Length: 183
Image 1 (cartoon, rainbow, N blue to C red):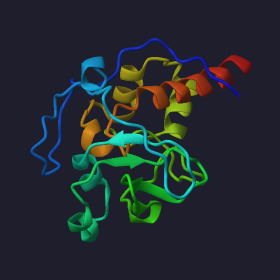
Image 2: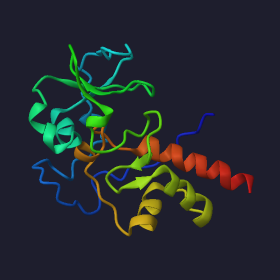
Image 3: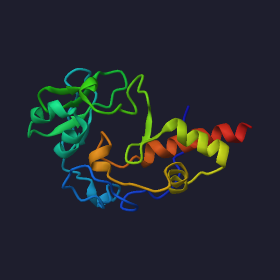
């Protein structure tokens, strides 16, 4: 099943930022093309061989369970993008953390429950679909406000990929629109 990605602005850089104990800039626009480095090498997961997504150390430190924070190395990290692989984060040479070492479920991993559409606002894919179907909304910002009453944006420290959830959120909107259009 494929879904059309809607051309919508992200929720980054707007709304309230809540306290995470992080000294990161909470108003950074992680969706800004200038925020993505193109000089990062591609590194395959040492377990499944699939190329991962580069993730900053600050993201890994915020994602691992508290008792594992001191084990986050200063090496560069990648998020394994295989749905089937149990690896969450790895360095160029080894697995650092498996999915059970992470505080939240990783949305694309097999059996992720809940499956988040937006980590910053603690919104699941199911909530997005229900809002699209039942309230007729199809805009990311409107859906977030409808569910939470406000928008929070701290993608670097709340999303396991350290980036905005716009693509996953829009895929959930697409699923909801598909259901709504069948009714």
